[in-house]
Image (cartoon, rainbow, N blue to C red; front, side):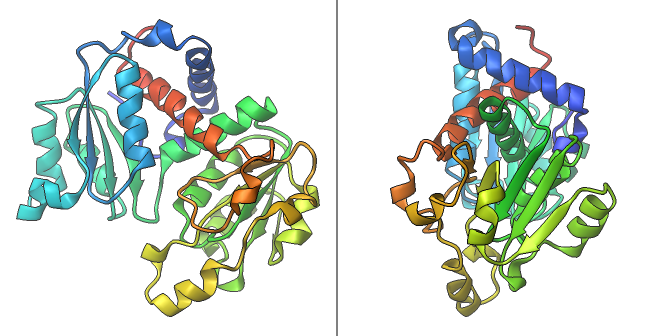
Amino acid sequence: MRHCMSPLDFSIEELDQMMDLAARIEKNPEGYAHVCDRKKIATLFYEPSTRTRLSFETAMLNLGGQVIGFSSAQSSSASKGESVADTIRVISCFADIAAIRHPKEGAPYVASLHSSIPVINAGDGGHQHPTQTLTDMTTIRQIKGRLTDLTIGLCGDLKFGRTVHSLISSLVRYPGIRFILISPEELRIPDYVREDILNKNHVPYEEVIRLEDAMPQLDVLYMTRVQRERFFNEEDYVRMKDFYILDSEKMKLARPDCTVLHPLPRVNEISVDVDNDPRACYFRQVQYGVYIRMALIMTLLEVNE
């Protein structure tokens, strides 16, 4: 039995197989409408989420399966003090697979140690968000046709953004990847990402403050929001949240084939006047998220096509 705690749990070959499956699902969704008949996913969300939870639930329903779960800690026995370990032992009696989001780093891993069903980490604090990374990689691969030889700009909150940390650690495994890290001084990537991932793997990168300086070089621009919930005080959040706003003027600096992504939700870091630009792919990204989660569920449940 396998779990999904990090994209690094899978080899590049396994990731490619999963993304190939997602591409086949996109072409022929009807062909997969019953592969998980009578299977159940439990979505155990201890902190709020719209996209991720509904994406998992849609993925399972699209496969013919069923959904149980809760959408906040208050509506679970966690409010009575039940541990994650005990919760997953109970859920293992009800469901075939579980997706867990938790504000504490490592909570899904703890669950996986006590589970008799596959566990998917659906986000743990500022640590990992592997299925968002799988979504990002699938989107880039489908639109660009490759995950090699790309210059990728990561913009915004690079300090607390778990999606950014996961994406960097996954993409460094592919040849020819170069990063431009765009952030204010206060939100630069953590030292461990710089030292243990980028420098250790000899991946070329540069750190810049101005988005305009990076735009002409990028194959992919990955925007992120400044997350209020990761800040200790409101004053710092307010000062940072408007630091980068991508608008149609800045898009004029981008390459004709640049792809703009965002893990969503956006607040104001991408102006709505960018939405109709053909290079804006963040809503397509949401759809690819459903396909790759379908592929992941099938892979962990060892369901045949």
